Image 1: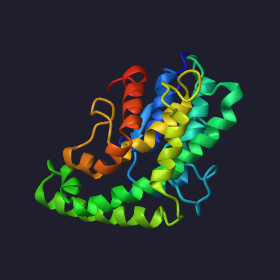
Image 2: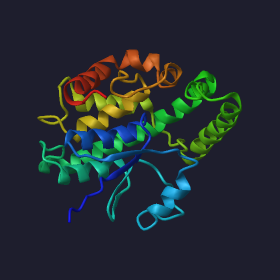
Image 3: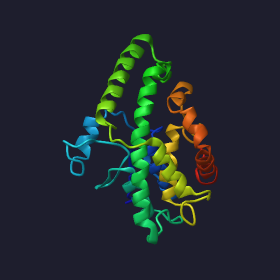
Amino acid sequence: MVLFMSLPELYCIDYSPWSEKAKWALDFHNIKYRKIPYSPLMAAPALKFKVRKKVRLRNKLTVPILIDGNDIYADSFDVARYSERSGQSEQLFPAPHVERIKKLDGLSERLLNLLRAEVFARMEEIPEAKLEKLAKMPDNARRVSLMIFDVIVKYLVRKYPTDNGESIRLLLEDIRGEVNDRPYILDSFSYADITLAQPLQFISPVKDEYVKLGKFQRKTMEDNELADEFSDLLAWRDKLYEIHRRQK
C-alpha cells in the first residue's frame, strides 16, 4: 500500500511582507507546501478553531501560519526556523548568529507595524485600491465586497494600534547601519537579509514578478519621500531579490 504524505499548509496573505518572509524561507529551502489565501475577517474564526491548541482563542490570530501534521508554526520567524530544519539548502540561520538574527527580526517587526499604519491611512485616500481587486465582480457583489473590505480595514486598524512613540526614520537608520554598504548583513545571505528587506515593501514595493500588486494597491505602499531618502536600502533590497528570490 502506498501512503501519500500531505503537504504542509501555509495560510498567508500573498502581498503581505510577513507572509513573504515565510514564503521566501520555504522557497529558499525548496520545501513544497500548499498555499492557502487568508482573509483576516472572514477566515479568522475557522482558522482560529483549527489552531486552537497552539493559539489561544482570546489571542490575536495573525498569518502566516504553517500547519504540518500536528505541528503548527504561528509566525514568520517560526516558519523560517521550520524551513531551516526541514530543508537542505545553505543555512539561513548560521549557528553563531541565531540570537542576532532574532533581534534583527524584532527590528523588522517594529518597523513593519509602524509602516502598516501608513498604508492603512493611504488606503482611505486612494479608494481605487479598494475597487481594484473587485473590478471583475458583478455590481451587486462588488458593493457587498466593498462594504466587507471597509470593515476589514477598520478591524485591522483596531487590531494593530501603533502609538508606541517610535520613529520610522530612526528604525530605517538602524537598518542602514546593519547593511553598512555591504551585500549581506552577515558574511553571506541569511534570514537577517530577508527580514530586514521586508519593511521596505511599505516604502517602495518590489517588482510584480516577485510580489504581484494592483496599480492602486501599489500606490498605497509607496512613500516617495522615504524612498528618496533611503534609496540605498531599496537598491540593496532589489539586489537581494534579483539574486536570491525566485520570480513567480
